[in-house]
Length: 206
Image (tube, rainbow, N blue to C red; front, side):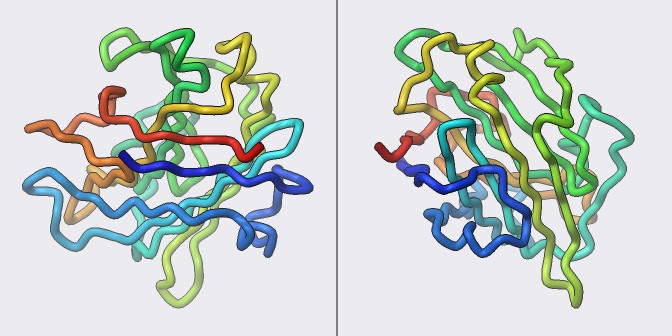
């Protein structure tokens, strides 16, 4: 099982180009376990930091010519070039997890539930997440970042834990060559990111 530690920062809500992201631990979405989704796969890294107010997360993918057709929040962004984090911030209290799915165009899909078939869309004030995405020049890929206030998480988890369960994903279903990648290995015959039994550990530095 993979373990990722979120380091403390002076400010978790950082601009996408801040050098402070370099102080974070680097995680890699480099596992492509499903046949048919293993060709021409991008390398995608993620970085997380937190302070007393919330958590910041940044993704970098070397994917060139990303696809962005989503037209709004809580639409099917997974068909786009998309990065995701699924996590349960209080696994000793509940089996429900949040899924934050972010398109290269800056549109997000947010859900909450215990599995694929009982998820409820969450219609929040997405401006509080400070979403930012940008395509880098000279075919160097793209970046995305957003911020998750603890005040938002506490609506789902009244008592936050310092040890979470979760996974990170990179996908694009409408690309010329589709890909589906993950950070912690998902051992299923068919593609399925909604498998919390294959979550890794995400810890907050004390």
